[in-house]
Length: 285
Ligand SMILES: O=c1ccn([C@@H]2O[C@H](COP(=O)(O)O)[C@@H](O)[C@H]2O)c(=O)[nH]1
Image (cartoon, rainbow, N blue to C red; front, side, top):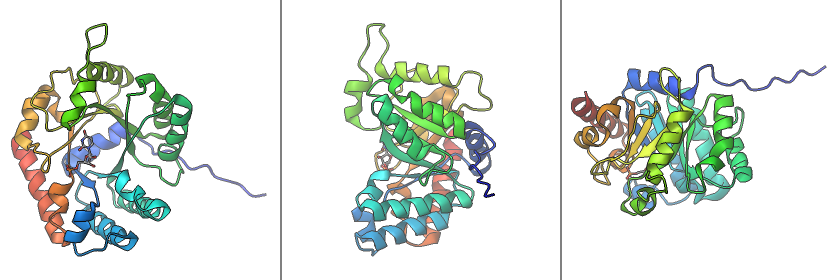
């Protein structure tokens, strides 16, 4: 008789695994954003072979150094199924080398479709199962429920957009509901409920841009706070203290172009990531 073995979930929830990774490797997240302009700067063609060479170089150079990689799904989807195959391989290689993978896909849809996205990214054994995925709450926070359920079942995590790094985000995210709270604060409060009692860190994080002048929000969600926008968008290590205040210890600052432009030499990438990490350590302590 043939016995089938169900893939097993990781032993620890995402929040605990992320806490350990940030404490041992430092809190830097490096984005994998193979922009056509970066491929050209690296001397690569804007095709699948170029995408693969770029992605493999970033992963092989940094997977033993950084806590988290954040591949940007759009740059892989540009190449259709061949691009997704590159992403799948990169996710497996990065995780094998000990880095966590947060897929920046910003998914959000009605609940029944959300269940399919959850199945794609958050189910143990799925071809594109990642440690965490970014989600958009703008079809209603409750529509994300299937993703929270799937993440709990597989020990994965999610990061929900709250205060994004782009200037256009404020018109939606700072809008106030009848109870006086901003849309962003409602998302943050719901995340705090999701993470209640979790130790050492909840698995359900928020995206709060490193480019903000101030957060003007209660950020104590007992979960990680992904801070994209460092470097190319103007966010700085010093600015993080002003934005995040007492929540600073849970911040995962993310840099993409600021590190990637130092390739294709593995040493260039490693030195750039190390310099970013040192600046963070100095500014954040
Ligand atoms: O609020 C957000 C949410 C996500 N992003 C993503 O992060 C990287 C930023 O790249 P840089 O080269 O470091 O500017 C990119 O993939 C964005 O889609 C963000 O910037 N802001």
